[in-house]
Image 1 (cartoon, rainbow, N blue to C red):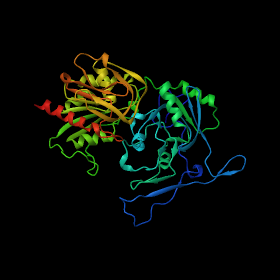
Image 2 (cartoon, rainbow, N blue to C red; image 1 turned 90 degrees about the vertical axis):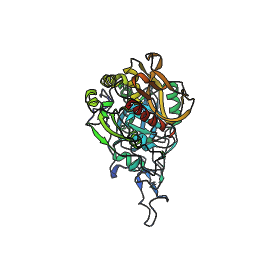
Image 3 (spheres, rainbow, N blue to C red; image 1 turned 60 degrees about the horizontal axis):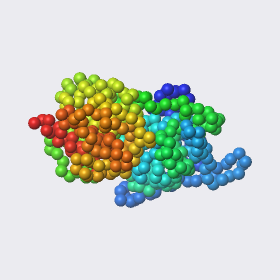
Amino acid sequence: MAAHPATASAPSRCLSSARPRCADHRSPSSLAVAAPPAGLRPCGSRALRVRAKVASVVDDGVERPWKLSDARLVLEDGSVWKAKSFGASGTQVGEVVFNTSLTGYQEILTDPSYAGQFVLMTNPHIGNTGVNPDDEESNQCFLGGLIIRNLSICTSNWRCKETLEEYLMKRNIMGIYDVDTRAITRRLREDGSLIGVLSTDQSLTDDELLEMAKKWKIVGVDLISGVTCDAPYVWSDKTDSEWEFKKDQSSATFNVVAYDFGIKHNILRRLTSYGCKITVVPANWPASEVLKLKPDGVLFSNGPGDPAAVSYAVKTVQEIIGKVPVFGICMGHQLIGQALGGRTFKMKFGHHGGNHPVCDLRSGRVDISAQNHNYAVDPESLPEGAKVTHINLNDNSCAGLQYPKMKLMSLQYHPESSPGPHDSDTAFGEFIELMKSNRL
């Protein structure tokens, strides 16, 4: 169990003092009606779930048919934002970032790259599609909390199994709504990412919460060790046929070792759909053991936090590149940059969302991409031979690398999407071609 956020020295995988609300402590908006009546088809029809609203009773004894503000978000700049809570209650600290995706909140909740962060959704209406077991990107939620403008009072989706509120309560994740997300987003864009404290504890003063925010640090902290797998395992699931959009499936088979720095399931699904047999290994797995497997290629996955804080991972990358074809995604891209002798730096507010334009400098093609990172590679620090292949068109930051002599390629963004557009899925095909050419 993690330490209390006021004294913890590093971000925690679990809430420090958060607890799921039991039935006696549920908010007035937490009730749901039963499943749709029998006779409705399981697909093609909409299953409607509505959260009933009941009266709130406050100290003056007056009943009100709405939920009152019972939570606060206190940012390190001293600003205090009153809100309404859903999900777990308690006190939690994290770095506040904003995500511009219009859909895909469940994939965002289960993306390990958000460990130690509060995710603010800029799309104002969240929760209307509910939650289902098929859209998980990992086996648990790693983020610190969810910040939204409007929590949908109903869900309308045939795949829905539970509401967003029920989902967060079961996983002990805090959420707040009825807060001005536009104003907070503008503050983050102007001042950069800020540390914040979410709390439903009315016994704590604003000043006490502010002190927690000012003391807590995320830069230089190893977050990967808290999200990686414990032991190697084999992955074999492909993208479901009903969702598969790539029709020309490869008949060749490639053995790939994937380092789990916080890997998303859809990366593994897409590689498997391209004909790869995958062995996933923990972040600290020795490079020598990987090379004994004689893989056709090695994937360095996405993951949370500061790449400069995981020197052991940089050393592993250094020992592998040049020996087998390598593909780095997000954190993997940053680790490759450092392994080549380059530098990484913390961005002002990072890139988080499913609508970032990226230009492939080799062809001039522009893809709309899914991105989630707070750090970037400084291209000026890279050695001769390492070539920038992609740039983010919003700020011209490095979004992709290639080093033919070292048999490597990397992307700063997420070609597997989930959530997001599929424009960059062809990057997996490039990795296949890289492994093919190495066989010759």
